[in-house]
Amino acid sequence: MSQTQSATAPGTFAALGLAEPLLRAVAAEGYTTPTPIQLQAIPALLAGRDMVGVAQTGTGKTAAFSLPVLHHLIRQGIPKGRRHIRALILSPTRELAAQIQERFDAYSKHVDLRSMVIFGGVKQGAQVKSLHGGVDILVATPGRLLDLHGQGHLDLSRVEYFVLDEADRMLDMGFIHDIRKVLAVLPPERQNLLFSATMPSAIVKLARGFIHDPVRVEVTPQATTVERIEQSVWFCQKNDKRALLAALLRDDEIDRALVFTRTKHGANRLTKQMVQDGFSAAAIHGNKSQNARVRALDGFKDGSVKVLIATDVAARGIDVEGVSHVFNYELPNIAESYVHRIGRTGRAGRDGIAIALCDDTEGEYLLDIEKLTGEPIERVMDHPWHFPGAVPTARKPTPHQGGKGAHHGRSKPPVEAPRGRSTPPERPAQAPQAAPSAEGDGEAPKRRRRRRRGGGGGGGEGAAQAPAQAPRSPAPRVSARGARARAARAVRAVRAVRPRAVRARPGAVGAAAAPAAPGAAHRRASSLFGRRLPSSAACAHSSPSSCWPVAARPPSS
View 1: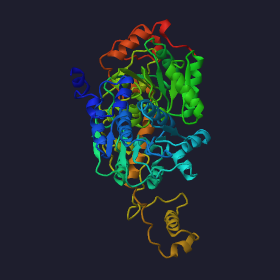
View 2: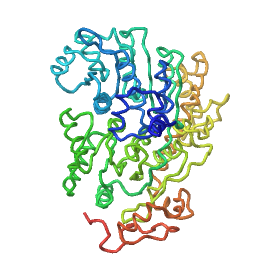
View 3: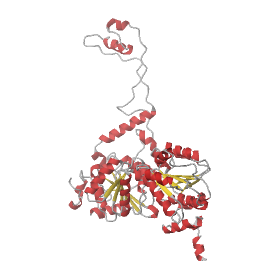
View 4: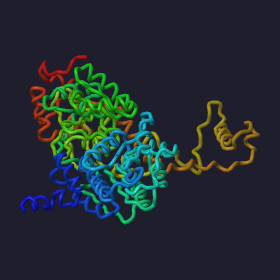
């Protein structure tokens, strides 16, 4: 009796009404308690409702949609004859598609259901052969799916369950038109599921086109960071980032480290540098072949690769247990990407550490991230490579700020353009009398002015007797949007030429704010580098490394 009560206790997978083979598979995976999104989504999906789910990465949403889909397929039984695709899951990246298919395989290991994944970057022969053998569940990226469908290798006319995962990422990667093409070939009667980390207006418009009377599940506010992740930002010059990262990676507490760069070339270059510094590192990004990406990811999973260096293509496509640290070697220029990057650690309720390296060109990115997340990130200033000029100042709404800042809630500037780039003023009704020339001819300036207004003609009396032309109309005023853009460029130009010493000098305009009270990241810096500067004073030397013992200073090279 007690076992029955325990099996159906509220807040367990058994209480959700899942089929018994799925409960055994879930138990074998080590799942004991459903996550909040699973508790809300699974009952509604089992009832056949369409759904829009908003959940940040690492919340268990893959199981939230895969378990109900498998439950329905188990209840329907195995159709007679050749298998056909009954469930279609669209994913933006190869890595994420492969991992979704791995979850379907793990949850369906006690039932006779076939699943497979198709994506680009590899030859299609093996994929076509598997499709011709029959499949129940297909996980795919949009490009390869439409390619094989156009060649007649797969039939989507019998799809009963359609899942669009990471919809906002699909939008960012330009797959919106491919999604509409896929929707056009699906049967009208089906259950639709859409999951997204954020819900921009374009996704809302897309969802209204194919989802009917949906249940909305939102377990966390949009774009909130995982609370269990310890975040910090370390300031340095751009050329010192490599040395600082190498020093941080030598921490014995690091099990697996995921390092993010903004560009593919930057990922390749940093990988070579980390290998030269003695680390087992590999790169993963869109230009890598699929085999290279699989090798890098497999090495990261089994521990042979300690440092995986990636671009944002992997920010939502890497689900590896035991990622202890995430390093933002370069801050993302899109604030939402920061949330998805650091979400690779601290998964499934575990603790994680996210460290960002910020140089003097990335201060605006940092302020955007803090505004999006609604909380300041701990600033570490007591390390050998600290550069005070990289510490951004808090934004102050001034009448001369505008342009890009208008999209972040900062005050709009007046319509007038800044000094030096102003719009041409209106001509006065009567020009002041010009001084006589050295030759005594005071009329020459007037004749020249008339020639300019008249647009040509000779000088002398002919010009004086020419019919008066209507004065040229003043140049059109610049629009408010154009003036704000000019103001923003002028502000950035002033900031670029302002001496760094002025920005770093306490009390001066643009001086860095005093560091916050030391936290966990400060204590880590102290343990790594041997000593810590007083938390209330930043280094004022031109070379911060001179404040540190010889053993802790960065290399002279």
